[in-house]
Length: 419
Image 1 (cartoon, rainbow, N blue to C red):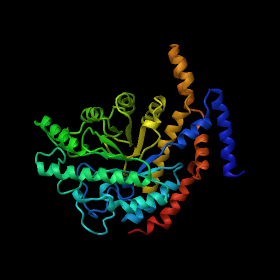
Image 2 (image 1 turned 120 degrees about the vertical axis):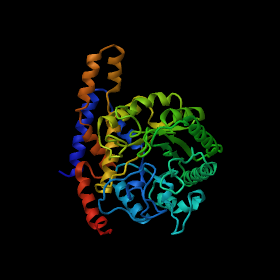
Image 3 (image 1 turned 90 degrees about the vertical axis):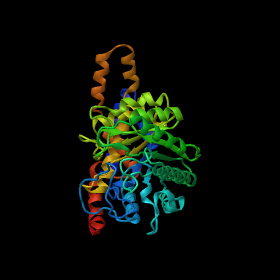
Image 4 (image 1 turned 60 degrees about the vertical axis):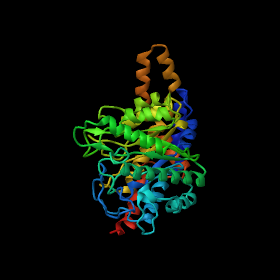
């Protein structure tokens, strides 16, 4: 029996089992088909970019590890993303940082970037059936230091305001040419390593900077602002806290970005979703895996990711949720990191879509708490993996663990030849 036939047989059995609980597995597959993940380009090259090859990362950014084969130029980044995308079922997006422009070997400072520096990315996305998202880049620059948009020096603030305005224009051009709005995510590392006495001043500066940045509405952009708990080397104070950006997003009708690594170690991101959705039109997620700190480990199918997916699906909010990946592991095969994290996110979403929610809600409404808990436990053991394998085959991607050998082959043929 062929792999496809085995997958289909297991899928048919799973469909029948789910039907017994009132779940339409085929409908779940179709819902997952509509979900596009935003693949972060910086996993390919450890957040180096093409502005200053070999430059040291600053602003709390740290990629750990030195596994061979990292991308060294735009061509290699694109090749690696194409390979990863071929092993991730579905149609997806690619998220770029401003430091990944096609600068042609020229020095282009960040307050001078233009859509032309990303036209080759737009053309590539068209050729590969991809959409693009964009991020302004506040870190690893002579003018970044500990503060950017919140800086005491007006000239420094104006530099970063101009950079971010230009970044939004680039995102607008991407959305226009590709026929799908581009998410522009704004995150700055601004903060202090030790005790700060002028918190109100810095947050007032940041708000004024944001007001200037968002003064002009752009038709092809979905704007988002991303909070953080602390930064490495900036542990005592972060200007753009969750409360700050939540208030700003609600007040201005834009998205708040929830990064799974940007909260207290015992604080779960999923619990914030239903609250934000009541006050903002959409939300953006950065799916990551913190280990003791915002360490951006490769996403795996753990409770945190599953709870995140469940909350989205239970709130019927898939169409209002923009899901991006945000991690950079330099200690393992970087293509493998892409595929593991992307598939884990999809598996969590599929499990949530296959949840016998109607029966669970009935139990809850009736106060049948034992039955609710029992069914939640039994649902964990249902054959969702057979449904995911079918989803892979349906999209021309390798099912189960078969992608491992393909990544090993790519490492031997391509990555191992990079010095």
